[in-house]
Length: 127
Length: 432
Image (cartoon, rainbow over all chains, first blue to last red; front, side, top):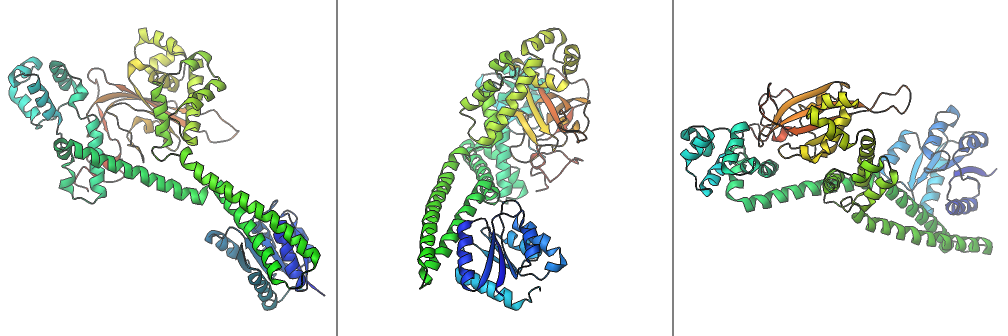
């Protein structure tokens, strides 16, 4: 069965590029443009990986991250955060909230693919 | 101690210019010639009635004999000296320097003030990069668009066998995003370019507001007549060349709204009428007119004949309004003297404080200060009230009946010894 990633990103063109890149690597990519429903969707889908933007309509990436990590069932879920606000403070906040990897936009495709690769092979995925 | 220079020297200078003998002048003002000699050589402090008498005898304004503007100059020179790490005794010679080389002293003081202004500008700009929401949003927009273009472009460049549907799709996306990038880059440049004009670094918003009010002599006939008229207020704020920054216009509008409300409730003409019989006693006036004391104080400050100053501070003690008066210095940056009645009433709404006071180390001009604290009208239930203190600064008439309160401008330039309210050492004493 194909690996499953939930991508929460309100920039449609970035979401499309990631969908293409990961789809080519054999991923099933589910995209969400709104933060409000993200936690529910992720709880139901139990994906192998979550990719989160920080500035989202409805609910911020930080809030989604905190809610997921508060649930023991998602303690080990690999979460990759993508943000254009690459300030040290944001990175610290994300690390404090238990992010698995933090990437700043604009990123290179190779860098992003490498991060996805290392996150999903190094960490045991939840069943 | 602060050297009481210059006042004596000026008396001597004026007397000689007037061709008067020391003994003659002493005779006119009713002191001994030897005492006048001590004064003229800056060996005796002088102030109050004696100074007024000498000024009258010489036919000059008392302020021409006291340091006046020079006090501010010397204060600035002392700050410059301390900032440069000059030693204590040298700092104490600032007045001598100002007296002997007035031109050079001006240059130095202007430079010092310019440094303070520039430091403030830097602070504002540093703040801005971190906290300007528009700038942050613009940068976010740029980076996001760049991210989309970079990712899409490298798919197009790196994928050898890209299906035509995907390729067309990505071309369209890149086209869209590149336009968006160009637009947002232009908008950002426009924002950064336009800004220096809207927030000039030359002065603080508070100073712009005071310049605006002073240009109107703190009187607004249109508001006295029309009362609370938002259109008139907006027109005044928009038409003012002094109000350069957005912040200054905001503050000015708030001030004008207060003026309008006050004018509605207590027209200047009515106050002047009652003052004819009751004199300039804010408490008696407030009782007679059934008005809050704070309002009477604000209205009295708008009467040009009184030549009064006014200070208003909010609950944090920040001075949010000032009408300057010569001889009472309010620091440009940083906090004032905690002994001011303005602050004494801050926690005591309802109490009206009246003090005869003088600011130490300056011209020793005496003032009658009346201060009251007013509770702002509540905006929600169960909320702690916001308060404002108002202090009217009236030039003293006659000698004080009771004791005089000696206050400072701000600790750094205050010579008061053993002051219980001292926050930091003075640069005037040995505590440098």
